[in-house]
Structures are given as structure tokens and as C-alpha cells.
Amino acid sequence: MRIHPIYSFFLSFVLLSCSGGLTMSYSSADISTTPDEHVVLAGFAARDKLSDGIHQQLFTHCLVLGDGSRKVCIISNDLMEISPDISDTIRTMIAEKSGLGIDNILMHNIHTHSAPRSGGASNFSGGTNRPWKDRMIPTVVNNAVKAINAKGKPFKLEIGKATTSINGNRCEKEGPVDHDVYVARFLQKGKPVVSIVNLACHPVCMGPGSYLLSSDYPGVNARYLSRAWGGEVFQLTGAAGNMDPAKGPKKVEYAEECGKSLADSLVNIHFSKVPSKGLLRLVNRTVDLPYQIANVTPEAVSAHADSLSEAARTVFPRFADDVMNWKSEILARFEKGPVASKLRYHLHGVDVDGVIFFFSDGEPFCEYQMETRAAFPDRTIFFAGYTNGQNSYLPSEHAYEVRKGYEYEIEQMHVYIKAPYPLSESMPSTYREGVIETIRETIEQE
Image 1 (cartoon, rainbow, N blue to C red):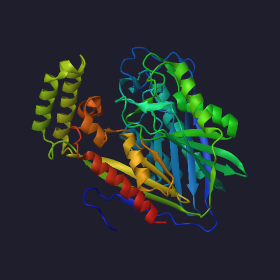
Image 2 (tube, rainbow, N blue to C red; image 1 turned 180 degrees about the vertical axis):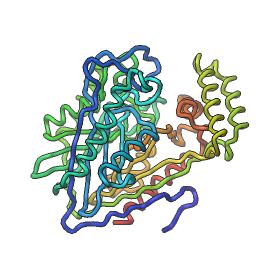
Image 3 (cartoon, rainbow, N blue to C red; image 1 turned 90 degrees about the vertical axis):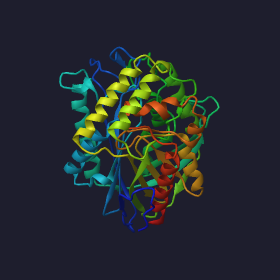
Image 4 (cartoon, rainbow, N blue to C red; image 1 turned 60 degrees about the vertical axis):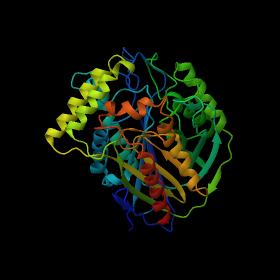
């Protein structure tokens, strides 16, 4: 198998087709807080209080597809993010309890900023979020195991496409925007069991002034479509690194407005039936993204930290302290062993009867999603970020060229994700080629 020099080939599973057609099983479970629990919400540093109520319940969704010999498990959680370490722990637990290989388990988070934090001090023993987390993890695990071990049943797949006006570029007023929305509906006995909505837009209608637990606009959209179509509905959030609700973060009323608007754009769309071929393929790859320097050393980290501290007064008051904390943590890693001089990303392609579902960790900018679909114009491609652990924004070439408005994603974000150095402006071409090659490899195995 050919290996392109700019990225490493990690793993490729070929799932053999079955003449009897594909099967599916689906399960969901509530991962909300209890009504009397008050937790630290994720996503907005400006929040200074605990949650004070529930707007929309949070769920974990698990769709398992099989071809008679092997299965692929797709999970979508109504959470902001789960670290790569916690994600690996959850997927390992699912694998051990179900017998399904961990590489066949893909766990996505919709990235709502109104879900409990799953990391940090609030999740330490005695922390406000710890009781919730102690329930959330086994609930996600057990729900997935239930779906994996269930006897799969035949299904029909249909796909549809629409556009929405609820999203816009969050960094640049006239910047790139992807308004396309894709839907996949899985039907049994002629009725929808579950529908997947794929859109590039941060679920942040409820901004830092909101302290309500919520799945934000995706949950509102699902509420309306579930009533209209039947079955359940969940979201795969697309390449939303630079995509926000068009009016920016506000309050709960805006989540209701955007969710209803999105549902209105989808409820009457035309669905095309996907011919049943019994075709299921999974490809897993890695791509190593370059930092701004070729060799990250303790000396380089210290010098970079000093440079950032000098510029801290132009950012925000506590940035200098955040930089020093970042410096201490990265230098401590060097004391334990080598620190990689590239950022490893995981890419996944799933082919379901010719429809492609692509998954990536991190937060790609919307241009990657649009470029990928343009590269395969005869294919329907669902593009999902935030999968198997959250580890970085992925700015586009356009963002590196413009710079103004994208300073956080380009020059500061590494401090908060604890990457040892900022990503290079050559990163976009490396990542894009990795995405294209992953999908091409998936299609070639049909």
C-alpha cells in the first residue's frame, strides 16, 4: 500500500461486504445533570458561576453498522469536548466490554458550550462535576455496548441536503462560510429510526451569560425534527472551527430561534434513497502536522514563552500567567521524556453503501470541509470534527494569510490546549492532503 511522505499511514481496516446487505442497531441515553446538581459549564472562560438549570437534556447516541462479519460504532455525545486521554479510556472500556476493536469505535462530541466540563479541577475528587462525570462515563460506555451487542437489523438509508442561514464566520465578517446542511436517515420497516444532521456551526447560541445546561441549537433542531419525522435525531458537528451562529453567542432564546430555523430548512427536504450494496468500509489514518519550528526543544519553548509574555499586555490581563503555566507544563514533559515535534492527528473514513462519513479530531476550519466535498463532487460526504479527543484548532490557509481576527487560533491557542508550539502556516496543506487521501483510500476499497 502506498504511503505518502507527508503523513504517516497508521491503520486501514477493510470491512468485507455482505451479499445480504447491511444491518444497524441504535441506542441513546441521558447524560444530563440531575435537576438539583450545579456544575461548571465548559467553553466560556467568562462564566463565574455554576449552572442554574436545564434548558435541553444531553444525550449520548450510538449507531452501530454491520455487514455480517464486522461492525463500526459511531457515537455522538451532547458534550463540548473530551480530552484524547479520556476519550481513549472510554473507547477502551467499550472495546473491553463489547469485544469490538477500539479502532472501530468513533466517538464524536457536538461541542456545545453549555455542557459540564469533563476535565479540570471541577472533576477532581470532591469537585462539583465529579458526581456527574462518574455517571456520564459508564452511561456512554453501557449505551454503546448495548448497541454493539444488539442484533442488527436491515435498514434503508436516504440522504438529503439543504442550506441554512443560522451560521456565519466568527472571526471575519466577510470570511468563508459553509451554509450546507446534510442529513442521513436510517429507516427500518419504512420508518426513520435515527437521522443524522451534519452542519458546520459552533453550538454557542447560549453564550457566557447563560448558565443553563443545554445541547444548544442541535438539541432544539432535534426536538422539532423528531416530532416531524419520527425516530431520534442527532448532530455531527462539521468543520466549525471558524463557524458560529450568525448573531454570535447570546441567550437561550437564540438557541430556540436557531434550532427552529434549522429545522424549518430541513423538515421538507427531498430525500434520495441510497441503493443497498452491502458495502461497509473503514479507514483509519494519522497525519503529523508541523509546528512553526522543525525541532521543539526546552530552549525553544522558554524563548517562545518569553516572547509571548512580552506581548501579553496586547492580549488580555491573565494571558501572561497562562503562558507561564503553559511553559511549566511543557518543560515538565521534557523531564519525563521526548516531546514530539509534530502534532499527530487522527482521520477516519467510513463508507456506507457509497456515502462517506469522515471524522477528524480537533476543530478544522470550514474551508477544509468545502474543499473536501469539491474534490469528490460525485460523492455525498458527511464531515465531522471533534472526534476521539479534542486537541487543536486547524486554521485554513486563508486564516494564515489574513491573520487579523484569527490571532487566537494561530498564535495563542496552543497555550490552552497545551501543545508545545504553535502550528506552522504550512500545516493547512498537510492536513488537507491527509483528509483527501483518507477519503480516496476509503473509496478505492469499494
